[in-house]
Every structure is written in structure tokens, then in C-alpha cells.
Image (cartoon, rainbow, N blue to C red; front, side, top):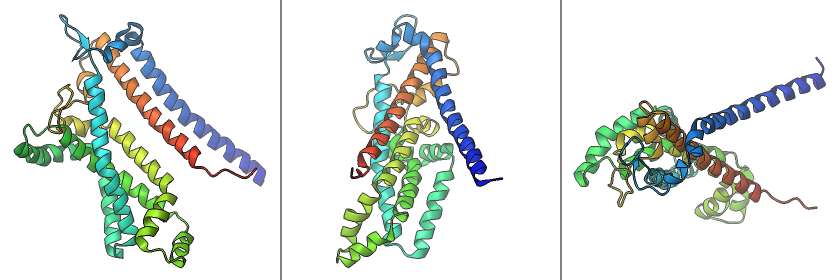
Length: 290
């Protein structure tokens, strides 16, 4: 087989794989849109942001307020990322530049182990260990704080492993050049290493945020599942994913369409995050001299 023929076959195979991947994502979006269409066509989508409560099955006073759950999803994700990103990136920097070899290997194995733990285990740990601790501090225990802490532990391996890979992939000449200029290690890390690895670190943070937005089982077990606007970290909340998981099994046709519409909103939010990250990558690309 000639090299040119092999290249054509490889190009065709990779193109088919890429097309298949994009088609699957498009099929999911089309499916969600089709199932949510009854709710969209009836105009109930506007009630997502105007009604105060979520009680779509009520015959007396049906309300479709999704704002508390959108806010809960946002707050849980923000709290988890605020905790996980500094710890994950800081751990990767410590492992690469300060930790002894045996401690660095242990850190690697620990993160890889955490990355493979099922979400139900994190939820079970949060329910049996973390929630009672928070309950002794400030009842009821199942709260925004518990959900944020459990979710932070879940996304920490994603942040740490991608940050480690981004730092390790840098040109060793950066460190040698900084040392030749007499720049100390802290300044080298903050002014040379982190800016040079920002795209890889940012991609890892985006993956972690996407997982945090879509996580369901562990959050259901520790968040309290009360659809309300929280006024403190200790108030129970109910993210969108929890609502879909808890109600999809018994929802009627109209109720089911509303849940699919809520899922469509989650997909739009995730797509917005991916698009924003892609725009940032394009913005940071160096311009070639014309």
C-alpha cells in the first residue's frame, strides 16, 4: 500500500470519526428540542423565569418557576470551582516544583484514584460524614455548602491532572531561561510557568465546570432538594439536575416536556461555556506577521 493511499484512508477514517462524534452531539440536542417542544410551543418557557415556585403537577395553582433551581446549579458550581481550582492548580505546581519524588508519585496515584471513584461513593461519603458535621455546626446539614464541598472533591482530580499535564508539557527552556536571568522560583512559577500553561489549565477548569454543572447523583444525596433561593451556605437547595432525576420517573406528558426543556437549558449553558473557552483560545493565539 502506497503512503499516499494510507494517508487518504487515515484521513477518511478520522473524518468519519469526527463526523460521527458531531452527529451524536447534534442528535442529542435535536432529541431534547423535540421532547421539549410541547412546553416551548405552549409558551410555558417564559414561566420558568417569572413564576416563584416549581409545582407543575398542581391542578389548583400550577407554577413552573425554574429560577431557584438555575440559581442553585450556578451557586453549587461556583462554590465547587472556587475550592477545586486553586487547590488543584496549587497541588500540580507543588508536585512539579517542590515535592520529593515519592510524594509526587503518591499525589499522582491519589488523583488518578479519585478520578475513578463513582459519584455515588462521593455522595454516600458526603451524606454519612460531611452532612452530620455541617448539621452539628448549622442544621439541617444537607445544604448548598455540602453540595459544593462534595462537588469540589469530585472535580479536583480533573483540575489537578490537567494542570499537571499542561505544566509538564512546557518547554524546559523556559525554566533554564528564567534561571539564567536570575529569576527566583516563585517568580518563575507565577510569571512564566502559569501564563505559559494557561490554555491547558483553562481547558481542565472548563472540563471540571462542565462536570460540576451536569453532576446529579452525588448532589441529590447532600443538597437537601428544596426548590428555593438560598440565603446562606447552610440552606437546602435543588439544582436542575436533581429535579430532572427525581421527577422524570413519574412526570406526565406536559410535566415531562418541561423537564426536557430544563435539560435543554443545561445543554445551552454548557455549550456557552465551551464556546467561550474556544473564543479565549483563539484570542490568545499569537498573530503571525503579515
